[in-house]
Length: 288
Image (cartoon, rainbow, N blue to C red; front, side, top):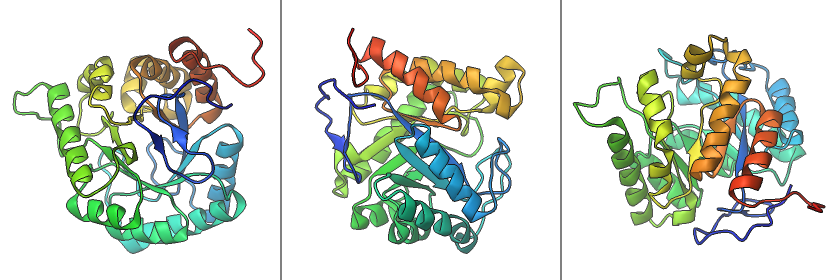
């Protein structure tokens, strides 16, 4: 599927292959978990098997692949950078060799891991802990785009509206990134569903996704298989595909640019239909 709508004025994500033009359509980021304690039970400990999974995600229609080696499930324990690198670097190298044109993201908030992943072939950084100064310095030096995700310890906001707090956090991340010379089209903002929020707070953020989009930067949403969907549907992580897809369609309606998902084929179908309605996108060969 190729974008055929005129993109907006936010430019494009400069990744290998064809740049991803913001506003042309919604892009799908396929998850490749290389951690043994993934919340959704999809973690793969073997690098060869993880690389095969990544290739399957790409074949299913992913526009980007996100490789991560540290679980972010509730109550997770951070791992040392050396452990994280031992998990993700072989997978990134294998994917880069077999998929030379595939944009690969490294899911990390550690500057050292980001640098090593870049050397192994990763194109962008997806940080679940916003944008630390150290990480910003690294991605600016390397010329890597950055996804900055809202996160915090605990779910208290001191009486502030959760959406207001998320917007202020993301705006600060974006401002500091631009001041370091990172191009606006390379600063992607994620409101962090499931991070530092109760289920009701997650729903409040999802209800106001248009306010996240209104910050004027490219945006990403990661709701796939999250616990809030489980609470609403009563289903286990691997059975939450339909609930996840509901949020995907709503994300497209709000103008979100990238959805990060476990179930790529289902998401691909959802964004194809939603993009046709919302963004006036059409597949190749469309006759009307």
